[in-house]
Image (cartoon, rainbow, N blue to C red; front, side, top):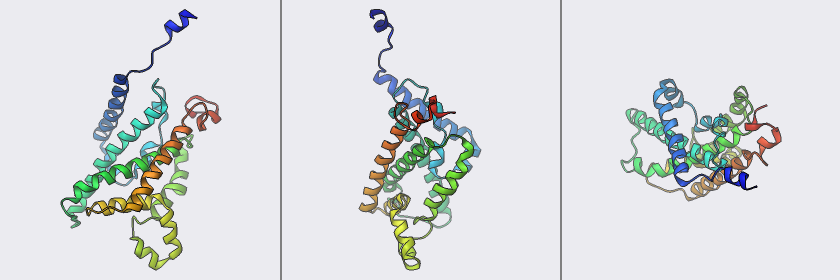
Amino acid sequence: MSTLSETRPSPPSLARYAICLKGIVWREALRFLHQRERFVAALVRPLVWLFINMRTLLVSPLPRWYLLSSKLLAGTAVSVLQVYAYLLIAWFWGIEPPPIGYLTVLPALILAGLMLGALGMLISSLVKQLENFAGVMNFVIFPMFFASSALYPLWRVRESSPLLYYVCELNPFTHAVELVRFALYAQVNWVSLAVVCGCTFGFMFAAILAYDPARGVLARRGAPGGET
């Protein structure tokens, strides 16, 4: 027994946690900068796409919740850069919010990115193969986008279809859009803020449980990393 206890690895230190977080963020940043086609494609893809392939990170000895959180933060950081690229393009098309709006929108972008990223990680725990992602697009991502206020404001949706208006109200993506839209003009939509924060914690908690090898979706599949 003494021999086994002596050879047992010690728990990771705070320095190792910091190195892991730095490595994941730096990896995502380098991939984003070096793969130019990824930058162009990212301009037409939602953040949730970035989290479909998660299992390469799960071989680390660090806790799953920390790896997932680090991946979420890294993806959100990259997504914020993408949004500001959008805002720059929009400026050339005459869409000019108040100058302070470029600063006040940053917290809203981070919250929206965390919510969508957490949802993406939850979805990725259910997708066995990359080929199955077409079904995710058709039945999850596209409906969330079109049944939201991303294309038309809620008041216009309510005028055209009250039923669709209530569907949009129940859509978390709608509240992410409204939170960003209000923040871009230095305002706060408190209802959307509460919904986005609640959904972020809910999606993240569910994703951590789903990636738990002892009791999540990966455990029910009966294979390490969820692969069959």
